[in-house]
Image (cartoon, rainbow, N blue to C red; front, top):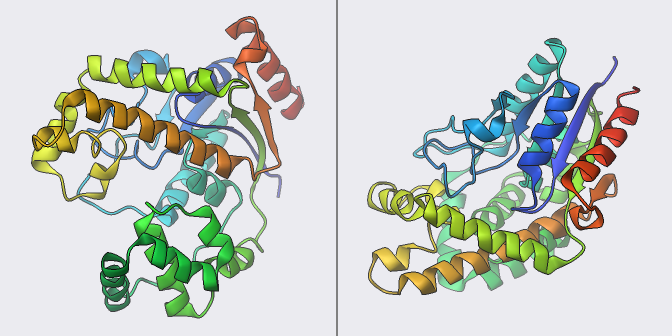
Amino acid sequence: MKKIPVIAVVGPTASGKTSLSIEIAKHFGGQVVSADSMQIYEKMNIATAKPTLEEMQGIPHHLIGFQPISQKFSVAEYVNLANSCIEKIHNEGDIPVVAGGTGLYIDSLLQNIQFSKEESNEDIRKELTELFDEKGAEYMLGLLSEIDPETAERLHLKDKSRIIRALEIYKLTGKTMTEQKILSREEESPFDVLYIGINYRDRNVLYDRINLRVDIMLQNGLLEEAKDFYDTSSDTTACQAIGYKELAPYFKGEKELSECVEKLKQETRHYAKRQLTWFRKNENINWIYPDDYSSSKEMYDSVFSMVNEFLGG
């Protein structure tokens, strides 16, 4: 069966993925499928940098703002929904453009990773969570490293839920997450993917963009949005999004706003570094550097040429 052509626009936060994906969709007759693990949630507009209607420029966007913040959402659920979106877009004669910075979503979707049917075990999860709270992240990541060094290397000390999940899967199945991923890739992907990564030669340019984005978010009402979430939804997964948790000490009266804003900028920069570490492992990504070009138009023309060749035009 002929594979569905998909354009994937990936990269760190604040790099310009949204604009590039929209320009590609406009030029080639496409629709955008978001691959952002926080943009899926309702209401979380400013902190997650959801594109506005004006920014979308009439291009249909999928999988943005549909999930209630009180409900859990898995990677497997994302893959099922995104597969349906891509098939529908393709059947309508348009080009699917997958855009986002959540590497786990992108890899799971486009590499056709098949998820284990093994459900979670509440008793095991509770036991591991209690051990995590008692011993700490470093200890738990060390345990994971002993049985599954590849997965442990990809995770950060702050990835509590993913560390616990990786240990839980091993306890449930006797197979590591790495072993399961190898087995899960045995079924070929139904997609023919052109990966386009966007980054900057000068890391300081990216960091300046991140800092500016945070300032603009604050001007656009981030503080009010975060306060509303802090007051009504502080126990949800969604509230762990960057942009909310860093402002919580201000709402509690523990820190000055300026200190929290600086922490937010710092955490966002750290997040960008983790995203780049993830994406650099994908050798199929064609990297585009805006600071190599004299104008946005010149960069877009270069990307359009690449896409045109991929689509056989």
